Image (cartoon, rainbow, N blue to C red; front, side, top):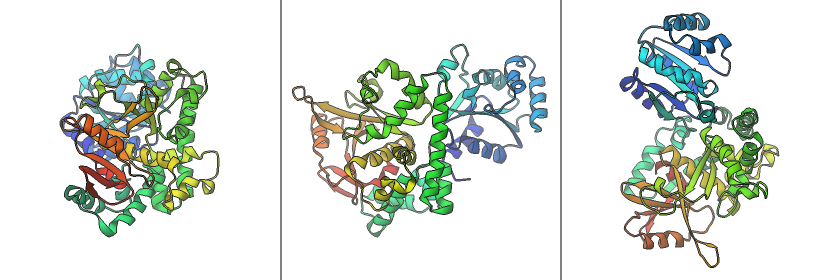
Length: 445
């Protein structure tokens, strides 16, 4: 059981929102939702009952459709089936992978109003829109995203609780970390390779063997591929083809996803559903293009242009070389030896996107194209908000530290743009109103 920061938010739900709201833990498969749910049941309740809808018997499912007018019978039956006693106001009922049986989610309105017990759902929204078209989704939900373990949690899993407070102090004071820089770069490179899926982190902590780490990640990718093939909400071939193409699209210079690279006849209307399914499954982390870099990003995303990152960078590394054995995976070798090539900058940019998402920032980027040459002449990797200011962030993976785009953006939108940030291989420094930070500082932005 790893320490997860989200657990404090779960306790806050129990203190302040239960029993008026159920708790919905949204996240990809194998990201640790069920483990967190059971931890809450064990530590914060007198008893808990776990209903797994990937394995639930038909008679259990029928309770949520046929017994809502007789809740005494519903609760009595659940206690017999699961051999667990429920105590009014002291028990938690967990509905695991609830997207597989949306009728149970609809039943929560009645169950929450009854008030006898607290309710926790786990799952994703993958395909749930189509599955739930005839179902009333309850408004009495407190939703929390469960993401892969972030860099701080990765360090905590190794018994390191000191590094992040030290980094916060150095970031606040804008002072270099000195002798700590190279060990931290090595640690962050390990995080890039391992990622934040609990199974992969467990393999790393227990063995320090990247072969076993990769085996764990390949198992997760196989599970995802199976889910894509067996789901019936979207065209399985389109979902799988898009997913398989992610490393190739991220390895390009501009990293924008071009659907016609899948095949010449690919159209937005064909792939909008499959892309939405992957996003709702929280397997991918989409970055939208901002038309106008103001503080209201969501009001300025009319462009169809987008980038598609993996929600977990460790899985991206394994996906990129899924067709060959671990020992032939050049990405592992190059990252471990600190010899990233330009086209492998996808790993750096993906891990930055992952860090920003972990800190509550959705991914947005900005570009400008010359109308005559049709070439991109201004490109900002990420935009985040701090107060009323837009903070542009560039992730530099090679020896180049050109900041022409960042400088032009600040000049053009002077009143809206705050301090520019460049994430690079080197130390903390300030230069011409730009803050240069080592990659690992992305975990604090």
